[in-house]
Image 1 (cartoon, rainbow, N blue to C red):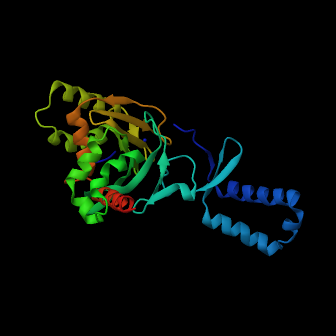
Image 2 (image 1 turned 135 degrees about the vertical axis):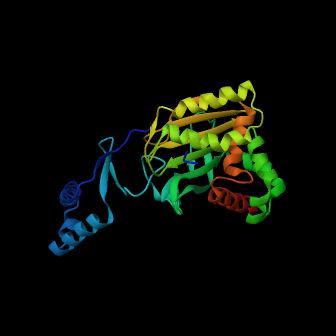
Amino acid sequence: MIGIGDMTAPIAYSSSSALLLSSFQFISKTKTVLPQFHQSFSSTQKTHFLSHLSTTSSRFSLQNGRNFGTHFPSKVYASSSVGNSEYAEEPATSVKFLKSAYLPGCSSSLSLLGTGYREKVFAIIGVKVYAAGLYVNPSLLNELSPWKGKSKPEVEQDLALFQSIYQSPLEKSLQIALVRDVDGKTFWDALDEAVSPRVKAPTDVDKLALSTFRNIFQALSLKKGTLILLTWLEPSQMLVSVSLNGIPTKVDATIESLNVTKALFDVFLGESPVSPTLKSSVANGLAITLKN
């Protein structure tokens, strides 16, 4: 399956000349504001400082004309701003996920439980397609007391636990971050390939839900960095949000079919998930949380 979400994009200066210019401007400002500090640097130290900047960061970005931060182009961020303590990194793809986030359609902030990645094999070579993170309403964890004290392997193998998460009326959301370009039709075809076998004898409601889902992606060109949210408000209602630049800020479609929303949950967290690393990480997060 190839895979499967608007904040304003930063204005990025990726050339080495812009980087050095920003560095010189920084030193110039410190000379004005902190003369004693600036004078304490020798010419050699300043040269070393600029060299260090140019080798450890590849670009600076300006946001709202006020702040700048370091970005690394080999990584995909699940937001347009970066803060070390606020993010968890999916190690295989280097995608960073907010540890807590307000997502479209949700009544409160959701907390990250775990992350993973989806890999497709082409000619015996594994190709990573996207990273994914599962968020839940923190209050949902109070409903999982029967599993308190369970180990990570016990949690991971317990389908009843994951069904309890799905059946809860509290919000949960899957955030998917593409780590390569893919056209919308290919994405939908791969998703449908995983979902349709899980929807036995689809009703008219199910067919309408699948058609709605398909229409979201058919005409889209999904670039690396595209973020997609699948947010379950309740078992029979799921919101879909897509953003080509940062975390989505609006809902693009509502899926109202118990069979389809359940199938989608099962695709990622059921008995044979398309991303075993995601389910394993979520199980670990649950075991740690329920241990306390």
